[in-house]
Length: 138
Image (tube, rainbow, N blue to C red):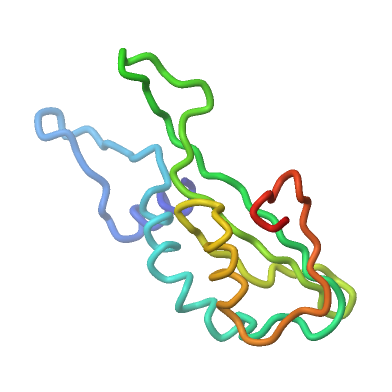
């Protein structure tokens, strides 16, 4: 939010109330969120691993991204519904954990795990996942 505020201030892009002329500062960080969505892949690409680690373990997990949802009567569904799942793989470089790969998929279906694992060259010698948390990897 602060980064968005600073960017708008430096660009003199704050909105004003047309009747009072009062400054209407945005209270959210959507501007910077949009920049991250647009530019992060380009900035990150030179640093992204192109192959799975050739030694050690690869830790796999996913997290569902939930959104608000209502039932047919309009009541909120506790926990909402899963909009998509983010798959993550952590490998090690010089003994330190490193986010190796992350990718969003519509579901945690086994076919999506296969696509995730096939998205990079090579094959890690050992992959570790919690079978209760990642039933599609059993």
